[in-house]
Length: 116
Image (tube, rainbow, N blue to C red; front, side, top):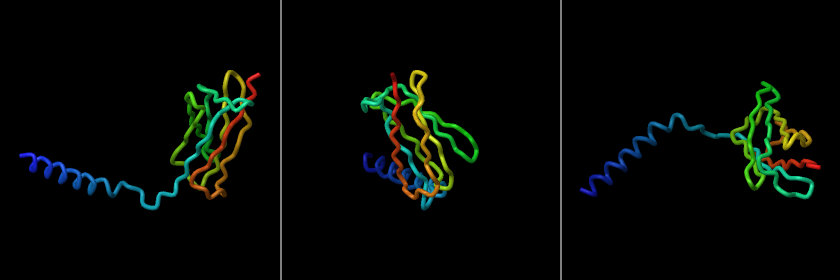
C-alpha cells in the first residue's frame, strides 16, 4: 500500500512538472535589487519605506523594511532604468538609479538617511 501511494505521488509530481514547464521562463535575465536602509551611523531603520520607480511607466513599488533594514525587489527588467529612495519619519534619502546599462543580475544599493 505504501509503495502504491509513493508511486502515485511521484507520478503526480512528474505530471505537475510537465504541466508547469511551458510557464517557466527559459533564460530568465531579470535582475534583483537589494540593499539596506540605515541612518548616518549605519544603524538599520526598521519600518522605513523604500520606493522603486520604473522610469519608463512611472509605476511605483514600495517595500517596508524589517528589523535589519533590508529590502528586496526581484524580477526587474534589464532593459529599464529604475529610481530608488527611502523615507523614514518625514526624511528622504538621496535618489539612486539602477541603470539598464549596468549588466549585473544582482544590484545592491544601500540608502542612508539623516534622521536628525
